[in-house]
Length: 254
Image 1 (spheres, helix red, strand yellow):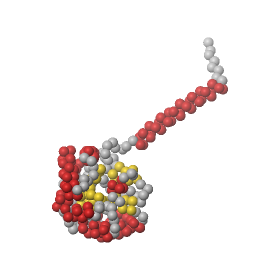
Image 2: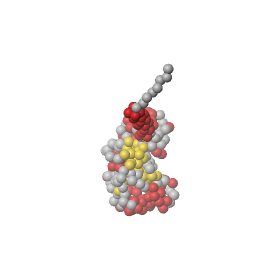
Image 3: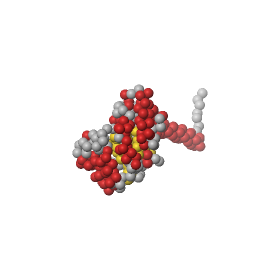
Image 4: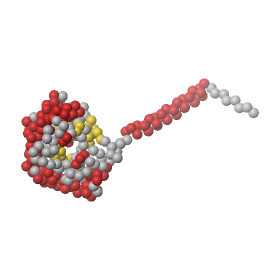
């Protein structure tokens, strides 16, 4: 016996509409799966901030200090002479403890002070308890000296791993890195420092510089850097002001 299927035009349209709906639903499903992959955070948990996403022409000048007493004064002199009201200094606590007068000057000038840790060691090589000890010890010393509790930290040598970020976050710290590195500690010459910083600076940038004695040429380059960045329309802000209300640029940590 033969079976003959007779499909009316109405039924054909209904079948076609069902097929289109199925394909449309599948397309949405795969698109959503793709979006999940695109927008899923690259790293769960705390991360280090390198720069911020902002339309404002502002950036943060940051200075690490871990040793010496000859270079910080001239750099503070330049900032004062140029009328730079906002900058962020990351202080190593042993250095701060032995140079309280310089720390006081930094604080009295209104600059933001963050932690640069205690001993100048790579934190990723330490045990979790040692990491906590280093951060806590630095926190206590800086708090005693400045009468304010720091909540930003930049690790010695910029070294960290997921454990370090997690512990710092638990202790109330935001981890700060940088997007533009002046390489001033290499002392490549005033002009090279100027060209590197000015050429790489961008909106929302965190610029790494040093006020330790290893940086012998920055105090000569800094006035020109400030003038050139101002000529480009940039405003100098603290790291905290930079990241407040902005989307931060995070890098994943393996």
